[in-house]
Each structure stands twice: as C-alpha cells, then as structure tokens.
Length: 308
Length: 328
Image 1: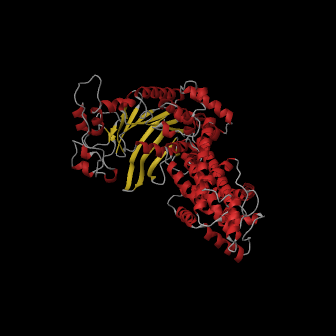
Image 2 (image 1 turned 180 degrees about the vertical axis):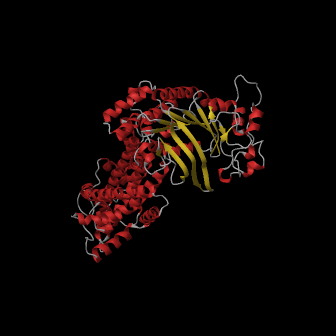
Image 3 (image 1 turned 30 degrees about the vertical axis):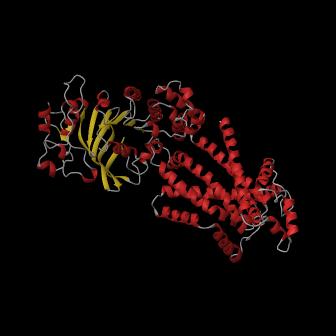
C-alpha cells in the first residue's frame, strides 16, 4: 500500500509538470503583452521595453521556460506584476475562501443528492422518481452564471433576504453554495439512482432479505455499500469540475477565492499569479484523485487485496 | 405433522413480452423434519415457489396473485408475517454462493449479523457465534478466516459460509435452492453430506430445489416435480423413481445415464420446455407427450392418486395407466 502511494505521488509530478507547462504556453499564446496592459495605452516604446526587460519578457521563450521551471520547483512564481507581492502568497491567501465554498457545496450535494438518489431508486419509475429525474436533469443543464444571477435577482434584489455578493458571514455563503452545488448534486442523484438500481437485483441483496433483515438495512447497508463504489469514483473526478465551477461562481458572487483571483489575473496577464493558481488547483485535483483511489480500495476489498 | 403447506400458489411476473405465470396453482406440503426435493428444469417455477415462501419474490415485477402458504399455522402471505419468520424460522441457501455473499463485508460479519440484528448480540458475541458456526460447517482454520472476504474462499467454502449463515438461528425449515449446482462435482457431494448431517442434527425440514436427479437420490424422502409452473407428480422417492405416473417424470428418468445400464444412446424428452408467455391449452406437457389426445388439450389435469399406487403418490395426467404400463 505504501509503495503504491509513493508510486502514485511520483507519477503525479508528471501531471503537475504537464499542467504548469500547458499554462505557460497558453498564457504566451494569448494576445496581449503584460507590459502594455500594465502601463496603459499612453506608454511609449522605451517604457514598455524597460518594463519587459524588468519582467524578463525580452528573453527567448525557451529561456523564460527554463527559468520558470527552475523557479516552480522552489514554488517561486515571482512577484505579481499587478499587486506587487509574492504570487504564491497571494494565491494561498485566497485558498481558504475557495475551500470553504467548495466544501459547503460538496456537503450540500451529498446531503441532498444521496438521499434523493436513494428515493428515486426505491421508487423507480414512479412519479416521485420522474420528478427527481426532471429536477436532476435541470440541475445538470443549468449554467452556473445564469443560475447565480437569477438567485441574486430573486433572493438579494427581490426578497432582500440574502446578500448578493462578498463574504464574511454564513448568509454570504448560501447563494454561491447553491449555485456551485446544483450541477454536482444533480450528477450525484443520477449516479446514486443508477448505482443502486444496478445492485438491488444482486444475489447478496436477496440474501440480505432472506436473512430477515429490515428493508432499511438491506438497502442502506448491503446494497448501498456496493453502489457507493462507482459513485465515489465519479464523485472524485467530478470534484475537478466543482473546482472549475468556483471560477464562475466566485466571479458572479464576488467571492474572494482563488477562482476570482485567477480570472482577474488572466485579464491583466499577471503571469505569476495565474501560474501559481493553476499549479495549486492542479495539485488539489491530483491529490483528490489519489484519495479517491485509496478510498476505492477501502470500499472494495477485492481491489485492495489485488493491489497488495 | 405438516410444517409448510402451499395451496394453489400463483405467482406472476410482468415482463416486456407480457405477464408470465411462473407458478400456476402449485400445491404441496412439507412435514416436520422431512426432506422434500422440488425437481424441475429451469423455468419450471421451483425457485419462484421458494421465493414466494420466503416472501422475497422480486418486486415490482413479480407478485403472488393467488393461493395460500401457511407455515406452522401462520399465513405467510399476510402482511409482515413472512418478514418476521425469515432468517429465524425459515432460512434459505442460494445457488451461487459468490454472488449471494456480499463482496464488501467480511464473512464473519455476514454470519454474525444474524445474531446482531435478530438477537441484539454484541459485536464480540456475534463474532464468537459466527466462529462456532464456521467450525460446525467444516471451514478449516475458521478463526483465521473470520476476517476474510467472500472472494478469498473457494466455491465449496463459500457455500459452507452461506449454510452457516442460514443455520445461525436454528431455523425449522431450510430451503436450499440448487445448493450444489455452481460447485465442482466432488464438492457437491461434500455439501450434500453437510446439509443432510446438519438437517439430522437440527431436526429441521429441508426443501431441496434442484434439477439434478442425482442430488436427490440419496437424500429426499419425497419428491415434487414441477413443469411449467405446475406440480405434475409427487410421491415418495422410491414410488416416483420406480413407478413414474407422469410422462414428464418417466421421460426424465429415461434420460438419466445409468452406470450399470446398457450403453445405449440417452433418450431425451422430445421438444423443448414451453414458452411461459404462450402456454398450450390444457396440459402444458401435451406438445411433447406421446399419450396426448383431445382431452389433454381441453382439460387441465389435476393431481390425483395413481391406480394401484399409495395415496401419497399422485400425478397430474389424464393417462397415467399408459405411462405406468409402458415404462415398467
């Protein structure tokens, strides 16, 4: 098991290298020079050239890439062009807010998604099941930016019961959490329903009934534990989409997290901050995937023992 | 004394092709301490009959739509009755022990669950009881294997685990649905020995569901033959083997190769089992039967005593005389 984790972590380094390389290339392919953007339209050529030299942008791309990689290894992304502070520190300051939002969204999805999925499976093909299916289909197809704005219009502008933007209290969390959670929740409902329907006709579920166990135990213990195996995998993978979703949700609700910092920094071609954010998000994603794999082994003893 | 009594049982399944009557008016009794073999090919309704007795007919496709099942004077079809008896009084062992055991729980826990959920035993008590049971069903090094998972056991050992689980609360009726079908031949005999030994020790009734005449031969007091959801013949093992009164039974007997018999070609029953969606009128065996006439097409035969045979030997055939004289 230990060797497996070490091997996985080692391969994760390649994934992260890929992420930092892609973002390096993409940032430089996008039109717009940081020096021009920072100095504004009135700057003359000499000023721009001076700033480019100061930022190291006058070097060849290969040279820039080599310096960049060497610095990334030390987690040094340089100063933010825009905020005059260490890029990584700027990103790290924003991490708690994003984690708070992602965690509440995940919890909300699990608390509502799993039970709804179970109910839909137990009442398969009934009107309850259909209603839940329609809800989850709508949830999956509603774009976050639209839902966010509608929620703001209804609850902040219309009913005036919740703040429309910013952070600081639990009330501030409500609307962004719902917006971020909905698509994830919807996927979870569908996964739980189909996962449970797949196992309810298995022999061991029949055995559990034949043992005289209550229907609750049959479904929630004997069937659900098996149904969870594929659910956990997809939930882990979808968590990446949830992190991606924070970019939009944080922007709509002016939530001071990494996502919004990332968007602002991309707009200003603030290379250091963008690269630091991407590396951080990629790292979280890789670690969650590793965690899912380990959890998978925990849930399915057949996988665990085969790996030993 | 009659422990289980099934009367005119009807079980239907809704399928995409229409409603299938899997069990169509089956009636039989199982006495206290008796071993009864429920024989029949796939689709004859024997497993569904067992599911109906246990109250675990798969829903919502299947439903018991007629007849009665009484166990020790209690109506098993009344709401909640079967639920209260499952596991405690009536237990069941299934055909494929790998798919019947939950892959994600340790076998000790799966056996111990019987004591924890039904008797409120503590984790430790349940574990000790599970260990005793595993020893009793002959699992070697049981104390080491308590914490193993089903996939770490061989087929025979898995079936022993299933049997241990079924016997946990000393049921009075054990239904074994093809308990040896998924196992190697050598292991089959061991499992049958185990079942009969435990049955004798516990004094319980055993309903042995099988399509394998060889499995039945050594153990059953009585056999019940099912065909297309109906009971076609019932009687003591010897009676049915030696004086088959139904053409289906005699056909089955004729198709069994005998070790000491003549080395001829096996004699199969002509045709194939009927499609339950479109059963023939009258007797369902009619299209495959050499004795069939107009009466067989018009009137569904009922179980009745065979001429010159004991009252317990009954067959559902309009022409048992022909069968009896031709075969014997």
